[in-house]
Amino acid sequence: MSPPPAPSLLDGTVSGDGAIALPPLTPEDAARSRDRFRVHKARRHGRRWTLLWLLIGPGILAMLGENDGPSMISYATTGATYGIGFFLPFILVTFVMAVVCQEMAMRVGAVTHRGFGQLVLERFGPLWGWFSAGDLIFTNLVTLIAEFVAIRIGLSFFHIGSGVAALLGVVLVVFTLSGGRYWRWERIVLGMAVFNGLFLVAAIMTRPHLGTVGHALVTASPFPGGSFNTLLLLVASTIGATVTPWMIFFQQSASADKGLTPGDVRHGRYDTMVGAVLAALFGCGALIAGAALFGHGGASIQGLSGAGFPAALKLVSGNAVGTLFALGLIEAGAVAILTISASTGYAVGECIGVAHSFNNSTRRAAVFYGANIGAALIAAVIILIPGAPLLSIALNANVLATVLLPVALVFLIMLANDRELMGKWANGAATNRIAGVIVVFISICGAAYAVDSFLQAVHIV
Amino acid sequence: MTAAEHQELVEFLERDQLVGDTSQPVGRMALSRPTSAALWALRVFVIVVSAMVIYTFVSQLVH
Image (cartoon, rainbow over all chains, first blue to last red; front, side, top):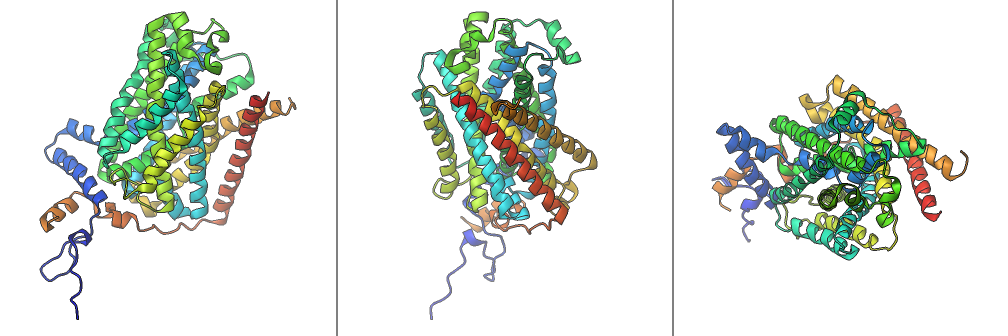
């Protein structure tokens, strides 16, 4: 009779009597543990700034990732259409909404160590889980197309064709995925996201009248006039430029993947707020830069089927502003391609129930990495279609995100209130009230644009 | 990996953070009938509104 196989260390540590004393460790656990070791060390030695540096990431990436190509084009369009006025403080309000939503996502991820897709699937059943993942994959594909569009617009300013834009996006995704470490991926994308600040520099270089900016921030005026449908479109797309389903999926899953624990929630909140402040500043920068075109007519934004902002800004404010805006669009599109592809990979991996972490090798998490690259590839192919209406795609991608957001938000609120999962980390009454108002507000804005534009499309009004 | 290395790696993770634990499904939440109805109403609302947005987008493309 052959002896039973000896327990492996990977299956659990063997104590003297042969019993398993420690839980089994996967390579994913081992990679995460190494990151957590540095967090423990910084905490033990009271190194506050090191601790903050180690724990930031998912919040800033979600916020700056959402300052993506279509969002910056939306902000610039509102600036070019209405000048500096109502939309400037409105952007700030939308970022307050984003902080409330993203804080919940971070908290649920840190407390449960599970992604959003996985929790919806397990807690509410496969039907709701797949509905959520389906919404996400659909909006992500549309948004990813818009990100490639943004890169294409930026590159076209330098006379570089759409083929390079498509290739650049896909190569970036493949490059950042290689390495098998969440930490490496996060730091590369964070490094790229810093360049979102180019929009603020571009805005400063347009020399906006500070009195006008201050007046708009304080009074939320002048209120936009003109076409009611255009106003609704820009309101809906501005909301969709700030709070979206992919951000919820991404921040919850990334917080879990990074290894955040309930003890890190305070730093997770700092991360989310720093991200929101930076993103709001840079978003306002895009609006102010776009406002330089206000009064110069929409005719100046005709390049590339209506999204030639860099070229228009070059004509009105000089070559440097046009160049900065073009580089900003390339950055915004590139960072968003990485974060949105990641959220797609997380959602697919979590719903199928296979490995879904950057801390795995490509062999161990083939579905996760495949979904990441696959989503980017499909979008890259679509932008190669000549004559595509780029501005319309960019704005409608945001509107679609706004329309589909309430479902994801309701599930997020339900999870954040689930005391069985969250314990003392569950939502308080004040957070619930604010979150409820956000859901109603977003639903009304999305529906108002949808109904009004639909009635116009079928010639009823 | 030695036992000591294993012990050290486990030490820096919370027990419910290990892949072995997170891959165990959490139990299903019991949804009341009104909650289920509200979720379905929201789902139908979102599908109808999305269809309107997509229709408008496509009709703008065609014209």
